[in-house]
Amino acid sequence: MTTQTRNDKHSLILARGAQVMIRRGYHGTGVQEIVQAAGVPKGSFYHYFASKEDFALQALEALYRPRLERYRVALNEAPGTPCQRILAYYRELTAHFSRQEKPEYHCFIGSLSFEMAELCPPIGQKVLAILGQSVELLADCLEQARRQAEIAADSDCAAIAEFIGNAWEGALLRMKVSGSVTPLQRFLDQLARLLECQ
Image (cartoon, rainbow, N blue to C red; front, top):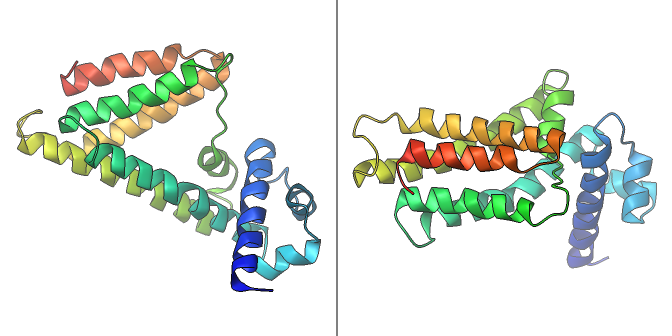
């Protein structure tokens, strides 16, 4: 088996297995369900992963590394001022959900947080690390806004970034429960007021 083939199979198991775990939860997903979704024998799973916990840790990294990179690009390389880039990013996400007949959102990191953060410290630490990276990216963009006098000179950019991240996650949860994008639209309204950019 070539290195490329091994990498492809590893990525396939991660992608297909993560989708199962996102929908069924950590405890509701066994190794058998993961390998069935990937169409590989059970032995292949243990060739790439030491355990289901190891799989979850690798899946978190595989799913959120590209998402964090897209976030970084949106906040740093898109047109507009820092505040405009932040608002544009969340407007685009809200528009994405608005186009769905019934807004659907399955949050892998949220699901693992609820199920495993206390029971499995390595998963809890990985979740915190990913959330921390997201806050840092947003805080860096807000720092640019502060330097450009878009927001107050005494703004606590890290605290504002954490507040925005928490508010967004809460809005997504409310959207999932209600089946409506109204919580996201209200989030956007308040974000625009917070950043004082329309």
